[in-house]
Image 1 (spheres, rainbow, N blue to C red):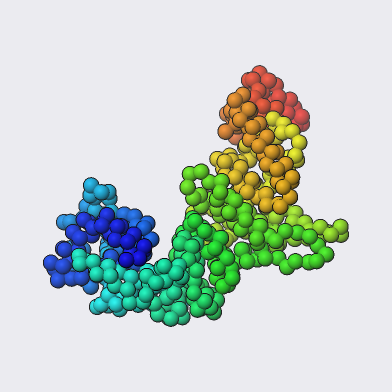
Image 2: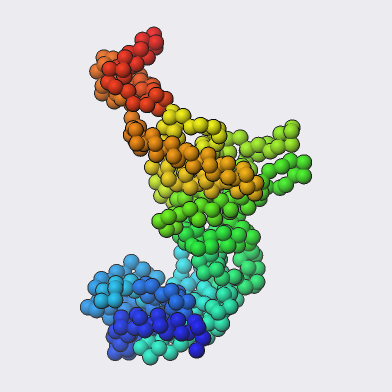
Length: 473
């Protein structure tokens, strides 16, 4: 028995009570049931969780009847695609279960939705799966191993191949090309040469897949252990040109007379360095910001007379580009704004110079970062990719001093939500004015005083407001 098979057996024994229970119900009704796909793959890798995927010859309506009365919850939101979901609570934990009727999916040339047809054999089902490592099954309750496409061999070789030809597989569902990059990133597997060739030749076919499905795969890729491996595959095959064109655009042509970093490689390094600073698990907001922080550079590149290359205001241009791309990929408004704000702020630290941080500068930096401040810390630190050790150490020390100053100032005054000493109602009462633009201007002036000079007592604030108002003429 191979190491993978030993791990798989151990994992299957762990979940066997719930798997055998449901299998016996199907068997008693004259149907076959098998653990399949990612569940078998993860069992063989020793990483099977409590999400279990099954396949069966029973039609969806029959599946519903068989799981009702056994499962603790049942849902049929995927029944149009042949999938029934269920939850089973046991002493060993709560299991999330999906049972899918033997099927095949395919797209026509213009459709964004797969056409589903049901099959009659597990072999027929497995040949329509995306990759051989996901085309293995364990027949239940007998536990016979079904592997017609040598998925176990590919699993041990850490290679991604397709059960049918890659062209057939990607034509059936173009999203599988994105999945190839995602599995490369998640599992640290390498696509076979024929898979890469087909992805390259068929990259434009991804355009018929909905933005929501593309976003889902991109998120899984970015949140994986090896996202850079998946991103390189997207770029090298041309898929990124279709779904995230700002990334390959970072590969700026080099000019022997002008010096600048390789922005594409720099961005991938920043992503890896940001990941290394994560403390509470994968952070999609931080990872997107790290990947996209310099996407404004190609549009702002200027060759200067002294041989340098400038990218003035690339952070502002990049923030606009980030919003546009994330909207097209159907990201939530909140996530889009957070990522774009980090892109916009990623140079703010350098704008304060390398000297002593004044109280005013610290207040402004904290206010700029707002609830994103901790992520801004990580992004800014990650953005240093220089090979000059002295320069890198100096930047790190400067940022250390900034964080120390923030802690010191927080001990003296409220920094997390800085507000002026007078609110809008007080301003109107003191100046005897009605709601309008002037109230906003007065409030902004008082906020500026708070940022510049720190907390003010009430009498000083009233005097400062009246002085400002008198100067308005």
